[in-house]
Length: 363
Image (cartoon, rainbow, N blue to C red; front, side, top):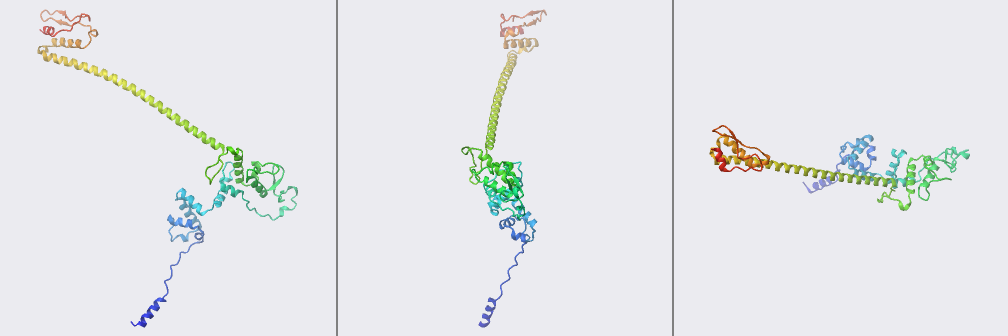
């Protein structure tokens, strides 16, 4: 190839068009509007294949996000929510929760919720038709005819009454909200904001306690007032727990004493029985050994009559004679008459027979 053709080939390669990039995956509008943290969470948890996420509908995407969040630990769920929502958004979400709409229960509001609740919220603009001919029945501030009367007789519309209640809940110096008279809970309910009622209850319990006796949460992010009822309940629970521990300890001590006493009695009985059995066994063995030794030493005693006499003699030697007041009777082989042996029938005159006497009887 010549040099000219070589340079021309290089020039053509240099101006060759670059390969077209791969077409990006088309995403639905719901995916485009999804927070990047949640989108990354769905992909990281493998809830939906990456190639199919762009075709998800809004409902399917919401289900995928819910499933992905539910699979996380509780602390990571909190971290994810804090990255997505601001403190104000979280507080607003809680203020709109159905739990706060229920005035039958008491709900403690956090610092962010209180701050957001006391902030002047925009009210819907009226067209001014209700201002005409309001007269004495209208709101004393904006002259709206849709007004309610407070205990002092003054009339306020819902918007002006809410603002008046907010002013009275912002500090202890302004509490309680008032017009000509202080407002009670029933008057605060007329404002139509259940969260304001919960805050009124919370501040009433806090300001009723002298400042020197108030107790607050040690967490700077909370710093909520701890009512005396909660302290008393905690003290009562602690007292109950202490009493339960004492009862369990006392029962354990009693059971230990009973076990020791029972064990001592059983051991004592076992020792007594062992001594008695050992004594009886040794006595029986002694008798048997004496009989055997007598037979071995005097072979002529194998006759039944002599053997009986020897056995009785051994028994009387082994046991105290006052337990066995008896006399040995022997039959004379010559006369057939019975005679009382010289061993005696009284305990005082009893003398153990000697070996010579036993030989004499054997003859």
